[in-house]
Length: 239
Image: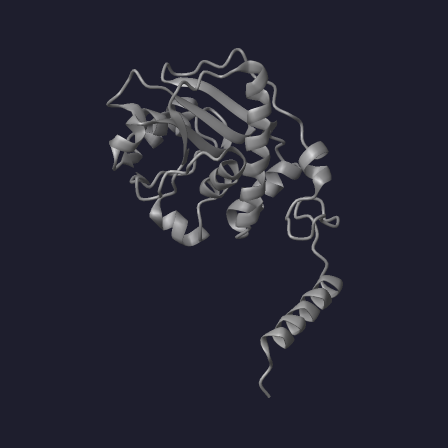
């Protein structure tokens, strides 16, 4: 039997309604119902679950970094660590986009008060790239998902994935000292189009800022031929 377009739309709506009743959408963080149903994280978790990160005046940034902003304080063994683990390993790209949207809103609000010096150039979101082998395994880059979420609230463009690459397959940073992290990441990234960086203010985006080794190394590659230019860093969390 052939259905009309109207009948197919009605069938689809019925199936969708049934699915929501039989398999209600829940928050991937706390397990409670999500409102609206097309989102992954509930409003309570986004607004109240995590501890806001307070800027650390003792953190020494490289000269090329104008600012480092993190939305929340990392909670080892807690809800946030579990949420970021799901983002990386459970194919939940939507979680990254929602976290990025929240981080973008938080940054814009914080910037109204603190006035980070971005300058006159248009900001360009540069997600920390994954090595191709790791991206094939995960299916997507969680930092790019976060960057796309930031873009939705700021209207800043996201750099094309082919423009900046991770060319060195690094070992895990977990448990490494600050110096070992720097050595592990030395010359890990390659910028294929310097012209686009020359006309933008690059903002490096990642999920967690720990020692800064990853984001600093990427920023150094982005600006190594223009040391007068500056970059910024935005992450979901600070460890």
